[in-house]
Length: 88
View 1: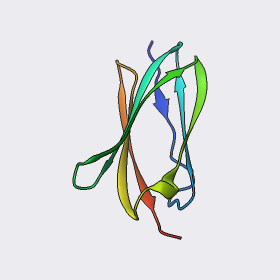
View 2: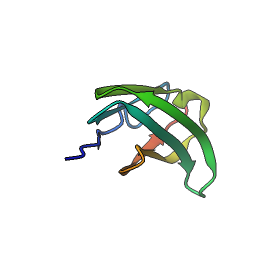
View 3: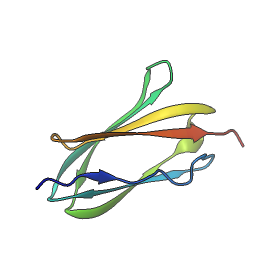
């Protein structure tokens, strides 16, 4: 059974940095994308991840204030979470 689980982004709202946590059933590449609410791609990354719990840090302080959609896919499953970035 394939289990790819993405947990809530913390902290959310964010103004410095955020952590994205997810679990994988085996070692594999994970694609992470960040889109703003008008659909523009602002971050794209391929991350080689290990079986079990993984944590990715996102430098949200580099993003403008607003709402973003964070999407992770492992090639078999996809998960999208919403993140709010507040200016300092």
